[in-house]
Length: 395
Image (cartoon, rainbow, N blue to C red; front, top):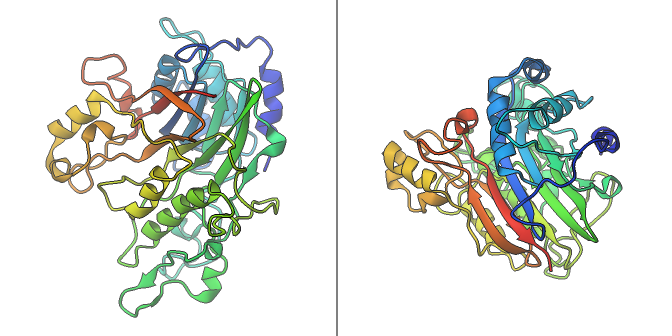
């Protein structure tokens, strides 16, 4: 774990209003948003943010309109100095824009990701070891497609746990890919012993809300696509999601959390009865798409997860009907969709989640997918994903 951005936040407090509202004073608005603020080259996002980037401006419009108190941004390129995160916060969220309320986020967390980090291994078997698909997580440079957590509330930086270096083979009964032509493991034993589970990272970030601590469990599993019949990405996606199901389980339940080891060497999952909220683009729809749906269903049906409320939108349902093609063959409710994918093959899917623990009461929530002509309808094309938010109350 690094602490640059958490330390900076102590300075950000000066002159920052701490009263950005959610639904009311008794609730906390928690959101996840894949903002697609990724670039092809290192440093390009910083350059774009310095020059009034049109895409980032639209992302900020959505954020400033919805006013989340805690939000995870997926696909926000990471730089070690934190320049991009600070630029986005100060230039896009807290600047004076007529008709838009400022969004004060004085606390933040960001850390390195596996994306673009060289593995030295030929992971896609193309004869090379230095391509983007040979990194520990697909990426053209270290930190591409990173994550950024922004918060109105203090982050307990000393208690953050990261699992970026956790090895895939440590997962009990791991869904290791198999070459269908030979029925042998896709990866050699030498490669398998070095592969990491997380394509970006898995974070447990404790946030102090009054006298309560809410654990934000953040991740962005690899999409179950862009591979071959061995399904190496689909199987990795399955185990990246399965990690959370084990992490929030009681360690006495079949020892499911006993294999988990964070990057600092601490063992086990989250403590029993500790409130949490799971955030991120999990790249898995419980009904449609090409993911191994058992993993996301295991999470949605987990006894510690409150999934009784499913955020939805009228815009998602309208888009699926208008776009047709693959959408017409899907079985899930299109009002629950959170991503606008290729209509020729995939169709729109529910892949972005805000999943609180049973201790949290859901007061309201939605997918930010307005219909044509409605507010923000001209801003949501900044990404192929839509923001998902819930208003949560604590006992």
